[in-house]
Length: 332
Image (cartoon, rainbow, N blue to C red; front, side):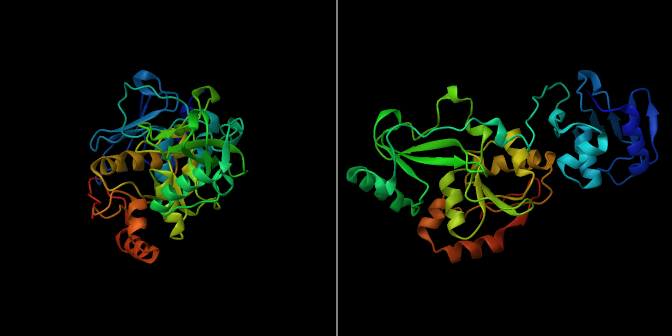
C-alpha cells in the first residue's frame, strides 16, 4: 500500500505552504533552493515507475528521493517517525536519495526484526578458544594477533576442516546470539577471509560487527574491518565494522539508531565510499554523521594502532574529525 494522496497533501499544506496540485503532482517551494518558486514536485503515486513510497524531484537542484526521505528532512526526524507521519507501516518502507527514476528497489528489513530474522549459527567444527587451543595453533594464533596488537577473548582458532588455520571472529547480536562469523587465515592461503556457507542464509551484508553494544543515540565509529573496529575500541571508542566499502540497506537501517562517524580506510576507494555511505545513512534516519580518516602514512586504523599509542590516536581523531561535507577530501 502506497502513500495516501490526501494525507501527504495535508502534511505539505502544514509544513510546506503554499501548495499547488496539478493532477497527481503536488508542487511546493523547494527546501533545497533559496528562492520561493515551486521547483519541488512531489508524487505520492510514485511517478512513471509507480514507486509505492512516492517520489520527489527538485528541478532546480536535481535532488531526488522518496517522500518518506523528504519528510525526514523537513521534520528532522528519524526513519520510524517519518513512517508514522505518513501512515505507513515500517515493514513496507523503502527510502532512497538522488536516484534514477528508472531504478527499482528492494525492500529492507525493519530494525525491530533484525535479530529475529537470524537462525542462531554454530561455529565450525574443531574451533577452540585461543587460550585453550593445541600449543602449535596457540603459538600461530598468538604470533599473528601480536602483530595486529589485538588479542581478544572472543576469538577462536580452527584446527581442521574448511576453516583450518583461521582466526574465527564471531558476530553476536545484542541478545548474545551468534549470527555470523568471519575466519581470517593465519597460514599461507590466498583466501584471506571466509564466512559461513551460503546455505546458512546470511551474508556479510546482513550483519554488523559491534565491538560493544550501547544505548540508542550513542556514537559509533563505522570501520571497514573487524580489526579496525577493535583497534578503535582499544582506544576507548565505540566501534562497528560493516565488512568493506559497501553499506547495505539492512546495515544502514540498524545504524540509524546511532550517531555515526565514518572511519574508513585511508585509500582512494575509501574516499570514494564516503559519499555513498553518508547518503544511505541519511536516508534511513542517521541525523549526525561525521568523518575521520587515518593519516595517509598508514593504510587503516589497525596499522595506526600498531604503530602509535592509543592517546596519540585519540588526539588525532579529536583534532581531525569533521562534519560530513559532500565533495570534500578527508585525507590527511
